Amino acid sequence: MPQLVIFASGSGSNAENIVRYFLNKPQIRVSGLCTNRPDAYVIERMKKYDIPVLVFNRNDLHEITKVDDWMVQKGADWIILAGFLWLMPARLIQAYPNRIINIHPALLPNYGGKGMYGHHVHEAVIANGEKQSGITIHYVNNEYDRGETIFQATCPVEPDDTADTLAERVHDLEYRHFPAIIEQEVMKGIHNE
Ligand code: GAR
Image (cartoon, helix red, strand yellow):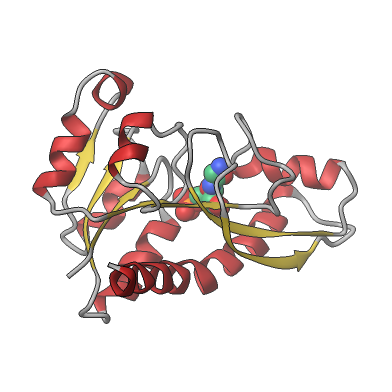
């Protein structure tokens, strides 16, 4: 059975939504969550579902194999980035070829790259007078937000939007689509093996 480990840096509402979705899907399991923030609310969220959590720092991720070893222990086949804000090390990208999926809260290739996360993205979209924003679900490579796109969905940007109101609309799209797209890609991976 394919097992997912989720990486998240913050609130973790997507992580929780993914966990809930796969509770009812016996063919795929979330076996752990990794976070770089010891105070991230996602840690609280995971307690409800008994999902094991690893907290790591930059050194653990880039210089040693603490994270890699933990994922092997958890039987991880896929990595899901759900609001994870650091670049994945090349080592892990090689270890999980085409098995790392990220969600970005805008329509890539626009509004991506280093520093473009969360409310920074929505502020930039509004400041540029965009009429439309959305989500991009994509494979991860060595550059921020540049891997192959799997799926995009759009939503309007309203004239009176703030970063918060736009974030809410984008989050709705994320909740609606991210788990199903993960499921689709994982099942495709199984069939191509
Ligand atoms: C999500 O909107 C996700 O798309 C975004 O962070 C938010 C996390 O929310 N990711 C990025 O900006 C990555 N560049 P959550 O912690 O409530 O799931």
